[in-house]
Image (cartoon, rainbow, N blue to C red; front, side, top):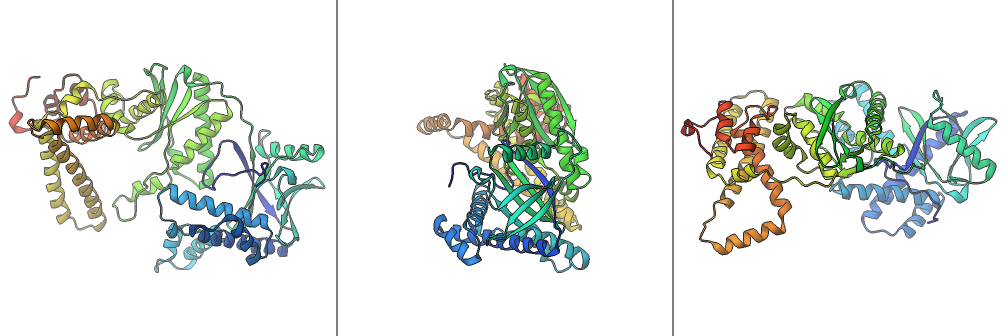
Length: 537
């Protein structure tokens, strides 16, 4: 492959080094539009064919020749189809999904189409959407040595921009490129200016073109590498930790000094992102990203976000339809990607951190100490992690984990809740509410298992000296895993022994400072009968 060929990321992955603009294609003849649609259908079939062969270990060179012979199309289109198929396969593997179960066009839409009760206009609309995703794709990588792009080339004819579409057999179709640039800062103006300059000087740059079918119309996306400014705002002046929360839907921003101390915090509401069309939500998410970056520019601080791949959005029958509806519109990853893109365009350093246990650590350690909500506390942990700080268990929390009476009481409370849940499930007549209760029961059983295992591990015989030594050595080797498990155990135990509400974490301040978990339980009316007189530490 030529060095000047532009390497594009996968379809779902946004790379901040690329800028993409979308336009509408208009055809003077219906015949030309039909030929392009036929080409898109053929190319989509090539991608699926290549995907199946790649799963069985086919080599790119031989597969490219096979595709060109089978579909009667030039080898560059064949190579591009193989690239998309390879990226799709790698994406499945990264997400730990079975590549054999992939459905091109969206499995979700396919499963909906299989439902027998769906008919009429609603079924036809769904079928059209699925077929457009499955069959409506055409893609061509850029190449500097071939005037930017060989198969799909942007050309100015009589002051009107056209896309010259190679049908793959030496024939061409021309389509007008329609885009109204309402702002002087519109990236389309910058893009066509770069093309015009290249035509005059011969200094071409690679630009990738992707054609998509959506709602019966054909759209084209042009992507080119963006020259980003040097990073001028780094974490040397501190950072802003960001956490996105589903309820209430908002961004939690925590300003943190270079030494890890909390300076201030604020939030940006995202409620409007749950309303309107996908286009409106896309626009609003870009607005939110710019708002975050403006704050970072004003404060001269770097941005720290979680490096999250996938979030569970619930499933049908879980008894939480309203929450599931919100989560389906919760564009967590896409919003973080937009923040990263805008930040890099403004020379602001973006740090990605491991999201593991940030929420648990935040609510147990910092929410009670600083009297802040758990969302802000989670953002604070993210910020500190971005600065390189490690979160240790507070001294009294460590001692609490050695308190068998505390752990035993927590186990009893969980068992009591499980017994009540089983009774509620037996009495509940509504199927969906019963499903919700069953989900809660499964979660509680997992938490009970965690507590019992930790209690048993901590209660080994003191005479088993060698086992104790081995256990200590094991903890040294896997200190991170042990620490994370300790946070998990604490989260479950404290929730059942000291907290009346998971939103009010203030009782934990007493536990952190004095280890008086009984006093915290008394405050919330959760004190066990056999500890009515309290305890002295």
